[in-house]
Image (cartoon, rainbow, N blue to C red; front, side, top):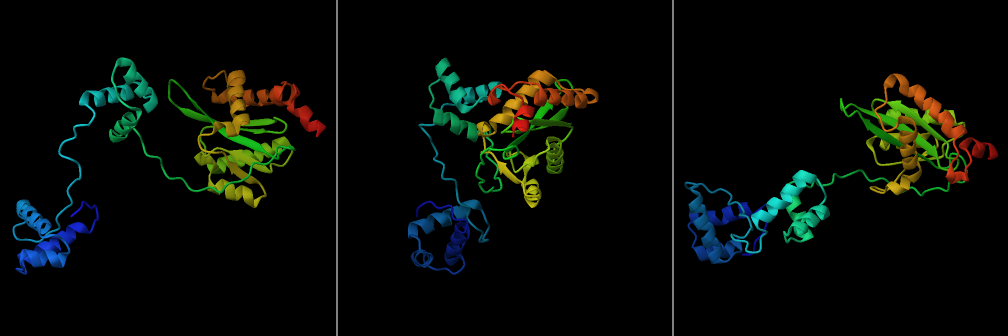
Length: 297
């Protein structure tokens, strides 16, 4: 009988053994009734006796299909080198493969990936709720397409994490930012409402990444007010190029990539927003300011 992982097979083996042990049927007759070859049933009987069930008919578990010997298996030293580089560097399979080849350890990239998965270094991807595709609108007017994101800032000393909520209008490059100590969908909604009030124009389509702060509740709440929430593609940061560039700019020009102090951050961000929207020249809008673009429209 060929190998099978059918979960009902252990119980079927027990029923076949019962025909011989309890009903005293000949081996050939019991095998015919069970639909297996007599040699297969004979091996099941030997396994039942070896397991020492003491006369009780219990399911015979399916044994592993792993071969007793694996002549082509990777040497233990190669597996150890792969584990060493992963633990030491935390790099991807391609980088580990390159390090192994550089030191003279011959191994294929597929083998490196297989070893990392077997050792538990690769975490399987979690299932995410399906989000219907929303066509990307043309940024032909203020508020037609607004990109938003959150910047995670970590204090290197205390390891405390704080967040910057940011948004930018793709048409005019007008931006808005807030400082918060946590993130949530409700806080995202309040941030977007305050940003729209500060901007003075209506947000028609808002584009965000797939973070938990931009989930289903936020999408439904915005849709009820006539605003569409569009999500960028997973692992495609170029979809949010405008807000990603603004995140870098505000860290370099305003925060200098340091952990902000809560007592000064609100005023610091407010002053920078006034400069960014009213005075700073942007190459993406022919070295004009967002305020000038809004006034022309």
